[in-house]
Image (cartoon, rainbow, N blue to C red):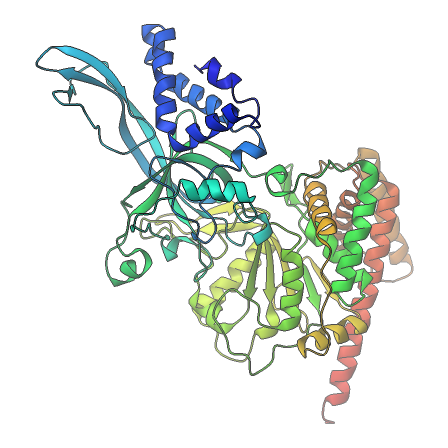
Length: 609
């Protein structure tokens, strides 16, 4: 049930009365909810008034209507990536873009509607107290009648949520708000000295990186989103204590026994293109090719003029693993070969940041284009000391490096891998990364049975020679590109000039849009490709040449699929198929040329026997 007067007042946010409505919902959301509850009871039958599910939906619908546009929702204070924003006052509305790290943090039984009684007079009344953990604050002479059949208990699900790992600064909410919004946030911030916990280090994938964390409580009809999903939560902010908070010296370092942020979720929405991309007009079919050319030009510049490598890097950025009749298609992990080695004087940091200037230049360029980007330098210190797989063997789900949100870009830098001993944990970490590349799955280690979780991570490997990992696609860089990257590493050149902001935003929108296009291969195209494949194998057999394998055919189909979506096509055309075959021919020829050249160099360098 909703209040029609309030709903009518929130059609926009341009008049003083509309601004007052927005402020009221942010400052005093519990007052709004209590008002909705009283009207719900007055307009409903006795049975309907006890339907907490229907009332919960009414609350959701009401707040969604009030904050139904970007202008109004941007006024809600934000728990940001670093936790540096002023802490909101308890009881106010906040917004948190987060990844669900542990969706099974437990369930709590809560007295949602309490029957109150005045023993002296016998008078009774009801008090609504959902969306809060605070105890009942009663007027003098009133007490809760715990034996009343009119008490309504509800269950709420609790999840541990963290700020999105690897989220690019440009994609974070609360980073580039207007001055008016920032002032609004400051006005409702808490100036008390208490400081909420920044979160447990064991529950954030990227150890050592600053982040925010909160316990989020979901009420029916909502339920906890699945593990590793990214959502925007709008809820009521409180401080509480983490029931699983560890004790001891290590726990004190992580949380200091401080109060934890707690959000009572009123509604949440999946994070989509609309919530991270600027307010640009929708891309038309004709604009796809212009945006594609713009993106290719930039990637070619980043890779020192290597247009072939830029084509494959674009296809990699557009790769998106989908399940088609039980088979995962659309993935394209990429190994770019020919990067300079990291300087020997560079010390291993053990952290998630690239130190090789050439690798860092590429990683920084991609972070400007994609909303989530994680860097993994292959330093022995990091590989041997980190845990790549999520682990719940202790009864609490500790995060692993690979517990990342879907569509996260991972940049692996092999150029910093030096001689040394890779311990057992390091070997397992590389094996788990290899599993993601080949199967797009991450193993969650539970006490009695490991569970395989499907994921959708794009992995780019930068290496001196061919990677130690098996990738879907290996790509040797051209000699001019290799020299360009060497100059970057030696600081002989200034680097790549950044794109202007408008072009950057257009490319971001293009990549997100193209990556999520619905795509299919028509049956007539599938039959025609099969016939061509059979003819090619027959011809190769007759001429006693190497025959194309099924793996190579599947690779070409993937390239054709991604090439088609890069042009905004929803179906595979014969022209795109021929273009994909031509790209693959160029790539294989280049790889064979460099492999032969490397083998010849090794042979010449070998001592005579």
